[in-house]
Image (cartoon, rainbow, N blue to C red; front, side, top):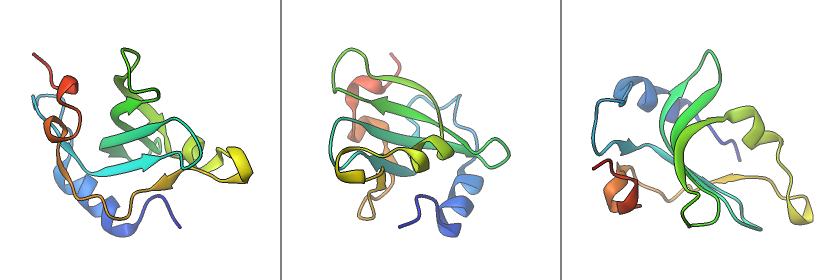
Length: 105
């Protein structure tokens, strides 16, 4: 399964930058099916092939906002040779509905 579809590319382009939005819209969710790691993408730059969003590796105080690369998500291989997957059933919604602690005060 592709991590990034044409439909998602169009949606990221339509939503655009959200750095001024207190409770940004999460467009896509990626996860490691065999271990820790969930990436909530709020923005995507097709030139750099990088996302911006909320990264939760362990679900603790290390979770943070930042950039992550589509290439790195695609190249990762975990247990049993499985890679990062996109949650096909995820429906976009504000980060406050997913990770309330991610909302800026």
